[in-house]
Amino acid sequence: MGWLGMLTARLLPIRFSSLSERHLPATSLLLLALCALPGTLPAQAQQSNDFVRFHLRDRYLIVVDAKVNETGPFKFLVDTGTTRTVIDPDLARKLQAPAIGKVSLTGILHQRQDELVRIESVRLGGVSLSELGVVVDNLGRQKALAPGIRGVLGEDFLSRFDIFINYKERWLRFGGPVPAGERCRFETIGQFRGSPTTNRVLIWTDFMDAGGARVLLQLDTGARVPELFPASHEPLSPPRWSGVMAVSDGADEVMIDSNTSIKIGSTVVRGLDVVQSRRSLTFDAQGLLPAAIFKTIYISHSGGFVVLNPGE
Image (tube, one colour):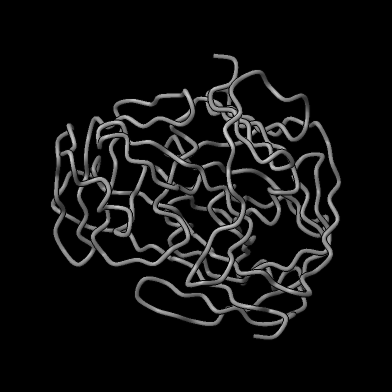
């Protein structure tokens, strides 16, 4: 495959149905299943214990001001569900970022080639990463949900740091002491069509209303509600879900189970709407776990664990 290896993405369209807007599934903005890339740029991280304020859009999307090549700031989404950082074409031209190759993006309905460019640095507060290869994409759906953004900070950037997210007070902290609380392990490598995927935050999650069925979900700051992909539905069928089920119409038909409870370690979250997609999908996780269902969350990339709702 050459040094670029293989890059695939799930670009989710906005789904329309007869359900109320409350029930429309707002799934991950951009999920990139990245297979190991030999010869990737040797990015260098600069650590800090800074607090970074963010804007919270629609109660789940984290928007921050970041500098790229020491210019800006530009508005970026923070998305743990995206394995590679993405910028829009206008920003790539403004930065005169040199092209270093092409990547294959595979969406639900299409497959296309996008450009990969090199940027000198990305700085967010007091933390930075240098010599980073980023994808160039028009980010149409992402900009519809978060107008004004110029890119998405993915796990290739975020995984270099331990991150505390406080949704209530709307700040991020990079580094600093590990908060008290139960440490729940996550996996950083998945499998996609027989090849390894990297830069993942995959967490085993128990669905208490489906007989305690355990599924592997991607922790995703770009997801609004939990979502299960078709491959994970079978073990959740018996016994029946205890919540109310709604079914949408159209090609992107989904089922929505309300008042659902999940458990990760000893942490239980109740009263969730869970989307079950009916479209056939192939992915390295069985679904999405929105980070925003927790008031606070600490992600230790260096230790491979999360602390959910630390301090409570």
